Image 1 (cartoon, rainbow, N blue to C red):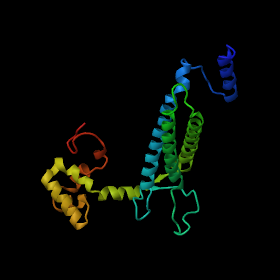
Image 2 (image 1 turned 120 degrees about the horizontal axis):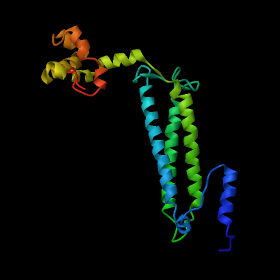
Image 3 (image 1 turned 30 degrees about the vertical axis):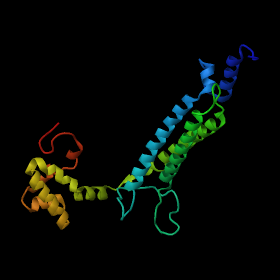
Length: 235
């Protein structure tokens, strides 16, 4: 009422030109002004993306922890001078910024979810807070994704020597012994390795369960990354 018949088309055309984005008129004006379910659903996707980024950032931080008292499997880039109290320390500041953005997005999602569920009858009056929080989340995720990729992920390097040492020391290698020497013997090898601080390979060969050649074949870490029965030519 009280608007020009062509107002929707003209308004949408103007807004599209100003923003460079493609808009279209809603099919049901009553639903569009009474509820903002689409906004809540769309921001839920942003929350999911932020959670995925947070998981990745945490994993990389853990793998880069150290270099001596952590996993130390990755070398992280030095994006700042370092710790003010611990000389030589490299802080994962970019990964931590991803963690902080995730917390903000989760908070925004709670606000948007609550706002989208409010309003009375035919009008939801929470448009300003919905728009503000949605745009903040979208902007933060855009910026932190670019920074995370350029300043952190792209500059990570694998510490191959550390990784190889850790794999060789892993008790998980005992699992590969099952098809070759049986579960009971494999368990005995694992217990001995743990008790004496030796590797699974050292015990398996030293105690006569496997020859050096057999150990190279059975205790191949790469084989453990594939499907099938270890040491039995499985698919």
